[in-house]
Length: 424
RNA sequence: AGAGGAGUGGCAGAGUGGUCGAAUGCACUGGUCUUGAAAACCAGCGUGCCGCAAGGUACCGGGGGUUCGAAUCCCUCCUCCUCUGCCA
Image (cartoon, rainbow, N blue to C red; front, side, top):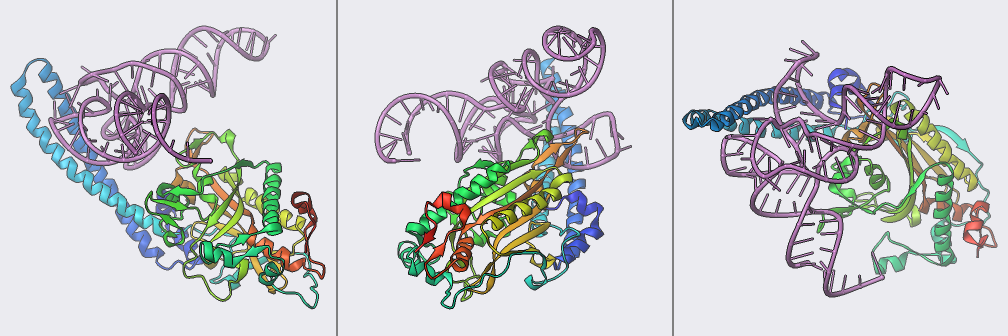
């Protein structure tokens, strides 16, 4: 969430920035927040006074008891009890205010940075880079959902039977190609200095709040109600939450992690005819990179992360483009996001395969992820993450773009990992 | 899962009703000394909130309670350890 002090001190610029993401109610919301915060301050001030008085009375009573002046002590006890009652009321009022304040702050998304293009819909995203040329497909080229049947490498019906829609089985060379990609992506990231982690794939409620999936995207996660855990929608959640409630030594920065996990998304309301085959699943595999950065360096890191992801796509020989997401299309918690889209030749459309974002202090503020600066003041870190990469759509693009009469050609960089160079 | 034990500052570890935000040691930071380093010595050294500041207030796993007063007593949840059971 946004920092309260920032909202107070830069009210106009915050409102203006929020307008860029078409966030309607900013002006009113911020007015209520400031009002509540004022209440909070005065209430706490009063409560502190009362407590201060009660504390000193307690000390007096202690001294009187010690010297045997019991009657004197009992007289003061009544006064102390009255103060205690008063403080109880004030404390209750205070926690009500604090809770309300928190709920309001949760409603405000991150402010887009100045480099984010203005715009309301995905059509307004700015294409900032394109790479590669459209592959020329033969006459009989088909989309990946036909190819996977032809070569029997992914089985949706089997998934329907065993689980439900959106939980496919990968089989034979399909499964091995998946495994190859995971290993390739992990190895590449490790080479770039990312420390590999294998996080849990369920998280608790605190972690959900920490990175901002809760309360905003409540309905999008699978909820294990018995334990009140959630299946992760992305490795970002457990990995970033490693640093919840942590004050890091600035010499540790930047912190860089890579992790491979399955990801689970209910995708409530986003199912339709346009999402066939591998384009949208309830469970899919993804390798994720995460950084915790010094605020001064986070935008350089964002650039580096984009360049890294682009490098992966180039090594895989895929045509892609980079979008600078416009304000209206930006995720709730992000200050800036670059999407990488791969061209899927048989479907003749662009598929998002990576999303690289800088959250600035938005997540760190919720996480209480801080560092001590040169003046020994605690400051919020910046957090970033990006897919590197999401597997199903990469697979879809590889299948479609590399299809030939003889079969599907495996990208050269993956051959050492797959042990075969053709699916046929 | 059952029985027993335990959770205190970065770590180790005192503290079992009052003056304790908390001894001590280690680690860390600054300084003195030194050609430099080590050692030694001196000083500093948790976090949030309110306040220009002085200062106030809260926090000893989380939440609740008893008491004028709780790290200390009670309840509850969580976590860890030991034993028994079960199981990849």
